[in-house]
Image 1 (cartoon, rainbow, N blue to C red):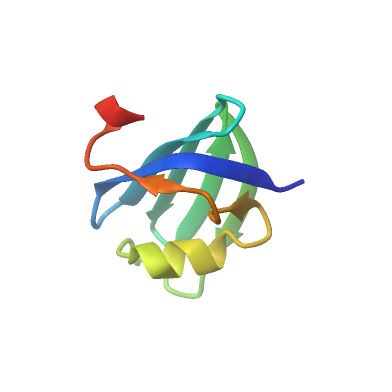
Image 2: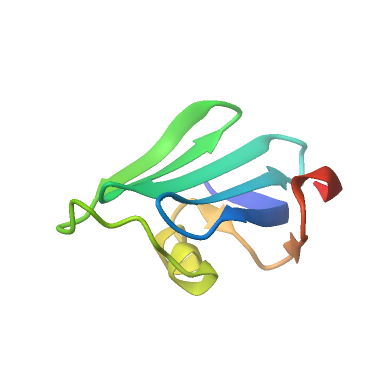
Length: 87
């Protein structure tokens, strides 16, 4: 299942890289990359988790995150916001 992203905010750049957001139907999105583990949570439930070959990795750009989430999230209508208060 693909979740359509309504709004998204990068809340930390590295160690961990993390994002918070909302789907178009109001569910919360939490994305985190730390210790080589990348996960997507929707409403507090892990819907995707991947472990990389870089066990100490924790930095990721927005573009890399979008690439990692293509199977789960649809960013075609997403609005990038500056703070979680705008979600």
